[in-house]
Image (cartoon, rainbow, N blue to C red):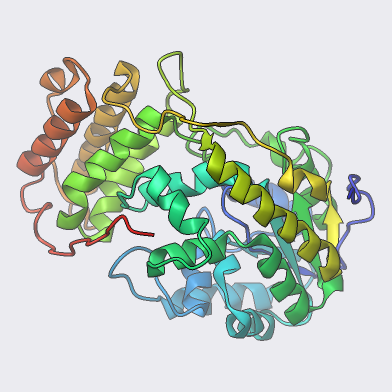
Length: 411
């Protein structure tokens, strides 16, 4: 079921507003990093990427009536400011988006249509459903979750998830329903689906350049590290973060978690190393791959019948992926360079906190001695040492907020 693999003829009308809604793990972070680092060149080329941050998450989630992270609240002023900048643009195309927008129900999709107006064109980027499952689970680790991969898979791939968090995860991965929803609300002629795949790595940037009238290769000028490109974790990296989450999640506010764990531990580990010979790739169990294949076949039919414009090959969305009967899904040890990067990430955040203390409300934390943390580099020892150091050096940081997480492992 091939669609148009060419990016010719995709140019949006003058002054169009491109709303990129994801989905997650389809190159969204790479696009956002490229756009945010090229704001001035984009303006000169006739495209406004509004705001001054990496993406438009805060503003767009305010439209949805939600914040980001636990115990967070919407920030309507962020949307007010972003919308004012969008409305003030009288000649250029405008590019906005964040993958959380794909989680809208029908009413919220209509709200975006009303807020952004009839010049809006929705872009949905998709990857092979089965292939994206490990990455989607890893994102939950960067959000403070602790549920093991196979337990999470059983919930997401079940017909009736028991947990609300699992139901939401299932819905945000429902490619067919998402495309149909936005095509119904905006009209199929105002929705473009871009199929992202490793076999066509250039297609994503090419498609956006074509839709926005940019010179070919402009977006690829931005340099991305592993964190900026949102690379996948190995089994060992994911287990390290999951174990740290288990120790610290219930003792941190979201702001603190994001500072220390998401940006510090995970950010440095992913951004400054590449998985090596001692890392294990996360592979689906055979049972999960089979269930995912049935579901993705349905998605392909739904997308095909939606009437949305498709760039790329829809068949790539349900192509078989590697799987094993008994894959390695946990690890008692961590590669020493991964351990080092995790620890150094926490140190870097502490030093940055020293620099920002009193200016941005970031905790003042003294540097941490890491020598006793890297001996052996077992997951258990590293986690214990890392959390002990963070607790002792952060002082009032850890334990100020009692936002505990009570996440079980049922489906």
